[in-house]
Image (cartoon, rainbow over all chains, first blue to last red; front, top):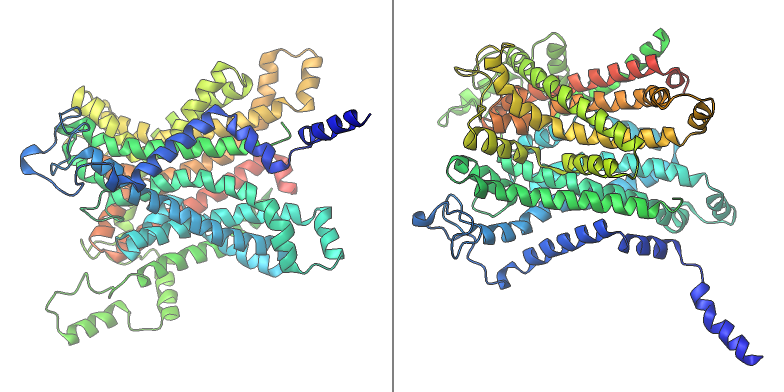
Length: 295
Length: 317
């Protein structure tokens, strides 16, 4: 008799229902595409982070006699750029600035936009109108135009490019956060929390944040893809990073003149932007479908 | 319907004024003196003060905004510092080329997007769906300025089939609808079309899937409708949202053309904006952004109205 009870006790944890996030986590680790993207991103991140210890050539050291070598040249597996600098080293080092200027705006916008949207959605009324109408004004500009307008007015530079992209993304995240919050606010458990005496800050922090962060996070992950393209685009126009820094957008710009001499080396930095952008997009899609438990 | 249109227009007015305010303020967030571009390096204090008065920079900001807005409403966006020509003339001439490019790109992008979206949604989870969604995700993820470069590498540098830059033989003269000019349009138009193609594919695929899972489709099939007729119902139901997305995409193409126009030296509003930024030609910068943003707002208004015209449910909400 006691043996059966013991068995039942031991079996109990296995039948225990998994929590929401554990289920989402399990679903996403089973998604081959998402995992492949995550792996590629981790590789690019880690190699950019550890670039100085990878035994690469100096990404700033050029040489006039070995300019624009082709892909596959001995010692220069990915060729050299228009100033004779090693492309492999520059592409890996380039990940540092490119990822920073592409991802930071989304992180900043995530924090600011989520706060604004949460407050607008939870408080409602006049405050909601004030915040959301201001957001509408920024929606009246195509995002590329807005980013370039602000960057163009502020002048070239990494900080200015991050500021302008943050301004572009805040309204978008605010809108998503506001609509998700409005949806959650009217649910019974929030009403219950309010009835049991929780203040607005407690409700927002404890009861709302956990429920709205998921969808906003997924949206923001997808935005990183756009942000990478735009940030590199600003550098490509000459509005972001300044030479001689290795950065994919800027490298694409300076190599443009080389397309008649060594076209495929000139196209390499863009392939990096494309890879990062598509991985974030696929990862965002994977997370979205993993979180959609109904299916 | 008229009431709905009137209401939409009233709603747009504060947006237009705010857009103008943002464009006006752009010049004032600029570091340094806005006069820097016009003043000779060795200008005297008196000359600087004189010019400041001439441009009205010595007045309080709200007054400057009021005056600027009033002149803008009357079609006076000031003069380009670099060329001395009226900003409005410069912008309108360039916008024409951007519209040409956007329409060509829309023809390609919208057709492909609708086609891929419909078949992907209809044959959901088959290999057709997988191919179409892969193309779509590549379309929305590709840095389009890079794609432009790659196309130039393939079709201009290596194959020598199409011109790499410009908008016509003999420099950027008048545009004409003949093969000599169209050759120049092909690569920029394809490059511009990939993002809208991807977005429309994704939207239409989701729409089609949603509509097909609704009860009325089941009822149509039960009634004995042929699959092609069911498909017609799907298209009808997807149209309003698809139309809204296409309108928005057309606006993005008009306003966001700077990168592609820079790659192809296409003489449109984007290239104008580019030169305005690098020559610190602030009136031109301000005017170009204002005109493009107003285009975008007007286009959104048109889309809203068109959407309400084909879908009566929207008017009621």
